[in-house]
Length: 156
Image 1: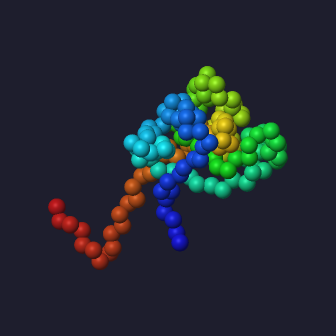
Image 2: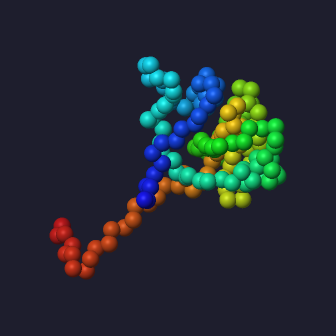
Image 3: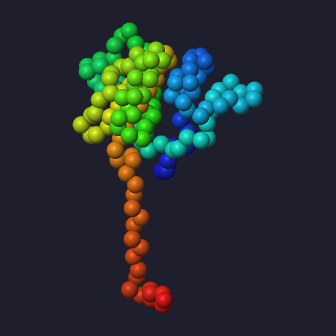
């Protein structure tokens, strides 16, 4: 099997209203609830650029500076990071989250690989990041088309 892209990612929440508050009202994701449905969804968000498997000890180091996850916090089962368009937008997003009453796991910071990120943990234990990763914003130049020596050039 060779998966080509992330087709869907979903978060499991204990209370739909808590999910609506964070993901729709605060983060502004275009999620909707279909008539009769008991979940929120969107087909309007762009696809993922990164999928990872993050050991808990590494998540603890990134969030708390120690290899042990704090016993007074839910053990996370998933992380998700929402990419913003510019590095400075991470700090603005972090301030907005705090104004809305969310407590950050850490303030915005730039890691050694260039990612600027601020993270929080939802009531359900999800690690939610707002980040800017420079390589995700670089546009790719189209590859030059090579012509075979046998292929004649079109006459103009």
